Image (cartoon, rainbow, N blue to C red; front, top):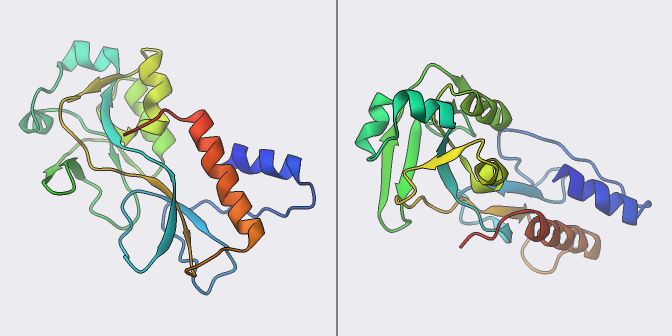
Length: 195
């Protein structure tokens, strides 16, 4: 988001941008924020939102890790592997979700490393410290260059889309709508297409 908002400010120097990063969802209703960007399932169906980019999470490991520990072939195999756990929001962070929206499966994972920062989790994974489940938008370049390999690729994972959330239904103020449009176009340019 930060590079895309920087681009937007360069194109419109009169625009004021205040970006606040949080590992917890920002509640935009009654706040000073025009909208928030979230990744993942929206817990509150009363929220008004717009899709910015489709996303899924995938399980990855470094080539060094799989040569040392092997490749998990089933969900049950995850119990015998070091899993890097990412604390996000207030959810039970040691549960990895698989399956589809209609047929979800959760697996409790464990490992010595836990963090609330996705970049740290991916760095630990790249260093061979364990498996990680991360958004495809974040790890796609690392999968492409061979720094990471995907494990359990035949198992579907639920969608974890990137959405803009705003407090009011109906038409948005033009400035807000233009900003959201810019983010959607920028994500489409920068991120892999995900179905």
